[in-house]
Length: 159
Image (cartoon, helix red, strand yellow):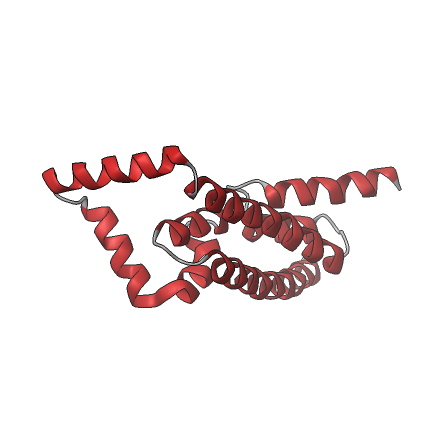
């Protein structure tokens, strides 16, 4: 029993780790023979709690004096230098697909944690960002759980 509890704890911690997204954690947990519903629930929770933490800590940081000084410094510096192509490209993609597109593609392309930071840096609202990232994680969790169960069953039947 203690070993099973430890395995579920590891699933939760791995899901909360920024570079170990649910794309890895859910198939791994289901492949280990753990209950798919509990793996999905722990993976979603472990991935979404750090996203909420990032969103609200960045919002608090934006109110600080240090951030305001940095923003003024950045504006002055931007007048003298050309904008970097990557920043302009990221802004164009964000404005083309919006927050929903970034939230849905985030887990596959950049990771949900970085997608939340990108959305907030491009002046998306904290509540909208939290809502869309949560919805995206729910969709990804359901899809990955179903796909993992089906594929693990198929692999077991083949071999």
